[in-house]
Image (tube, rainbow, N blue to C red; front, side):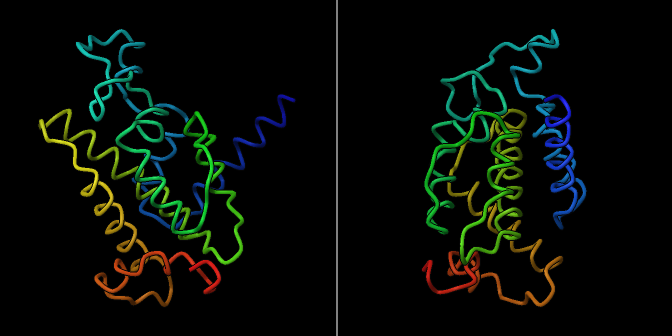
Length: 187
């Protein structure tokens, strides 16, 4: 059983490193999946003085990686919206690693899985950047901005890393659902 868990983690990280995104994003995701990001919960566990351990987005639950990125009441609607693009329904797994594996292993007919994998990285990165702006610059939370930033990040990566991708941002972002579909059946 121990060997199977190690292979699963090895496969998880092999998948992560194969995705065509900037290396700082892959490193961020690697830290997220391994639960090594400095969330308030993690800082407190390391004996760092943290005045408030609540999530800086919702200010209700304790800030840990699972909550911040997938279960926060301010973040869940973003995932639901994105999942609606590919007609995907279901609950978000508890841990970042489980969530990553769920999205990386996505096999839905007519869905460009490589773009969906990049989307997972773009949205988690946008959430982290927003969280840090709130914590360190006293910014306010704006769900639309988080989403729009993630969409722009994804478009930038596709322009740089996907051969033959030449769509103008305004057209592409207005038709983003189609960007994830290889067939008209999902539309």
